[in-house]
Length: 159
Image (tube, rainbow, N blue to C red):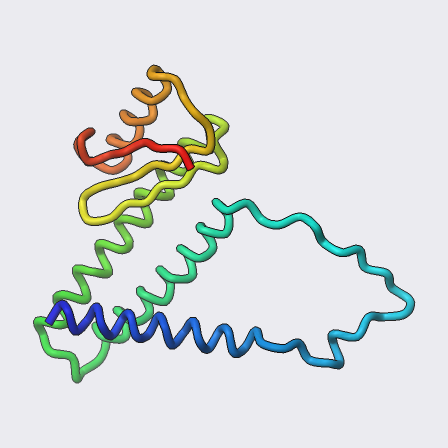
């Protein structure tokens, strides 16, 4: 049954990606023509990969939560499927809160481009720069406090 839920979620994610791609397709010709009186400089600044990842993570999680909520609220969903969907929704929310807490704490230390990925009882913290052993121990302890995970389930790495 869990495989069915995961398959439905995967299909929904693919469908949503296709729909978004279709909607973002060719720009409307009326809005794509440059205005003669307004010169707009070309944007050469691209977002940092950490920001791109955070935006995708937020979008994906919102879609997952919406699908799970739909399953839970449906009167046609079997009780065991509802229970699994509720558990998955709790896990997604918990992972999200943990990641935000760790990323917030790292941002407070000046690591605004750090990322945290929490899944299945483990966590990886991606840091944009090398750190010394003292900072690594501090960040590991901070991640343990935020997640409740044991040190052996947390990995610090660069990207």
